[in-house]
Length: 92
Image (cartoon, rainbow, N blue to C red; front, side, top):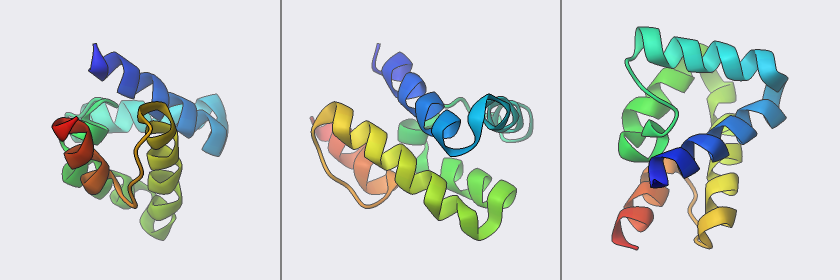
C-alpha cells in the first residue's frame, strides 16, 4: 500500500517539475535502464538518486528536493534527502 502512495507522490513531483512528458521519460528510463520503479525512491533511495543524477546531472538535486517535499508533507516528517527520508519512513 505505501508503495502506491510513494509512487503517486513521486509522479506528482515529476509532473510539477517538467510535466507529463518528463514523468513518462523518467519512469521509462528508471524501469528499462535501472530496473527501478518510482516507489523505489524510498526502497532504494541511493540507486534512485544515482539514476536521476545520470539523467539530469546537477539538476538532480532540484528533483530530489521536490520529491522529498511531497513525501515529507504526506507523511508529516522532514528530511533533507531521499536516504534520510527513507530511513524515517521505515522507522515509522
